Amino acid sequence: MGVIYRFLTEDDTSAFCHKVSDALSKGWVLHGDPQYTFDQANGVLRCGQAVTKEIDADYSPDMKLGQQ
Image (cartoon, rainbow, N blue to C red; front, side):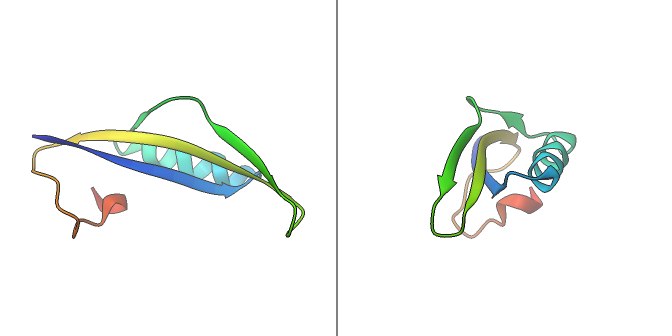
């Protein structure tokens, strides 16, 4: 059994909430607080949220984390 980690990012729109909600519905768990930063070059607020998930396999760098 192993634990995998992802950091989800998106512009500050409902798309970010949907991305995090989708991960939660697939068994991922929030890890820490959400993060926000202003992207001056593009004039948008960007959001990030770390998530983790326990899996019944050993971690491999070849894994497609979003498909776990």
